[in-house]
Image (cartoon, rainbow, N blue to C red; front, side, top):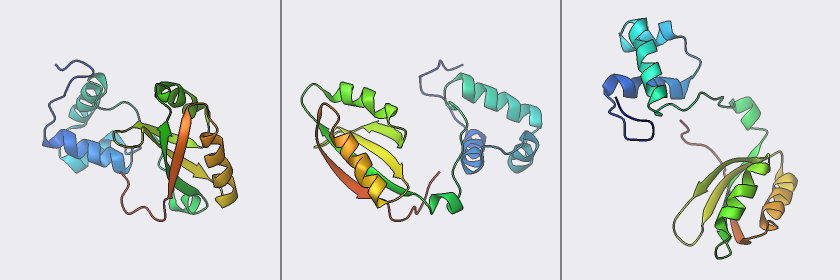
Length: 150
């Protein structure tokens, strides 16, 4: 058995199971078993193993198009002042409109995914991020259309 945090050995059925859950994490085990052509007990066992090995960390909600159409989303790249990256990373989760924070390499130090109701709210949000202590500058890319999300 693989320890949590180490690389897990995944077979084709594990990969198909995870792909199905990415599409709809609420699929019943009976339907997963039918899709994968394996017994329900094996689906339960695989899910338990994938969870205990840290491959699956949780199940989430993907917002529907009807709601998403009413939201403006963006990537905000953040350049931090020297030695203040960690402090900025710790403040970003406190902003409710931030849905993800990624440490990156290159000219910028962090990318955050943000969401707002409209361009006025987005502008205020970007200003709030830019005013965090330790932020040197930001560059924002508005997401026009999602071509693939898993």
